[in-house]
Image 1 (tube, rainbow, N blue to C red):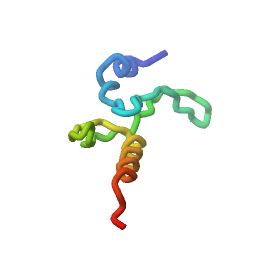
Image 2 (cartoon, rainbow, N blue to C red; image 1 turned 120 degrees about the vertical axis):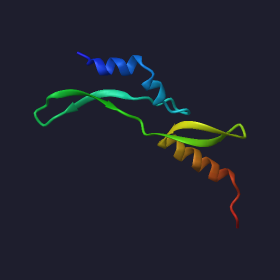
Image 3 (spheres, rainbow, N blue to C red; image 1 turned 60 degrees about the horizontal axis):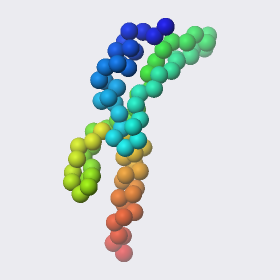
Image 4 (cartoon, rainbow, N blue to C red; image 1 turned 90 degrees about the vertical axis):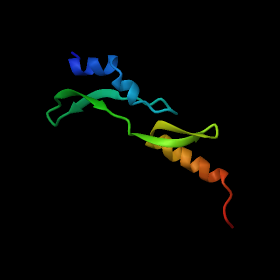
Length: 84
């Protein structure tokens, strides 16, 4: 049985707010499993950060997960020439 708070999250706009701009990562649902093997519902939240990134040559405020942010910075570092 799904609790009412989970239904509100699925149907509401909160899930839309927790979505990565690049990969589309959103909250996932699963179970907490105690030592006695009792299962209770839980949510796995993506690590989303609001950041300003350059998109099409213009700064844009985006919500990005840490994995995509790291990949973006690594790609940007690779494109710029080294000082030596």
